[in-house]
Length: 81
Image (cartoon, rainbow, N blue to C red; front, top):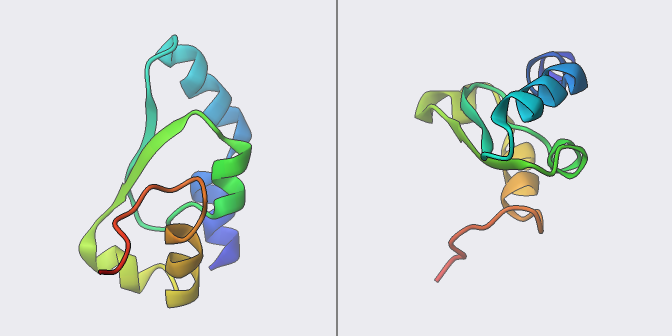
């Protein structure tokens, strides 16, 4: 899965092109299967949000990967009550 993660969401060239195209507007990862890692979000700080489909969350990401992302300081989330 790690090779897929790198090829789908961490491509620096695509990120740089998107940031240039956005001209200061927010950039996002919409409808991705493999979620970005905390290190990808750190390296791509202008990402404003990401979204995955419900079934992709568990089919393309491990529980550990999801937990690491959701507890990252770069991610705002709703903590457990």
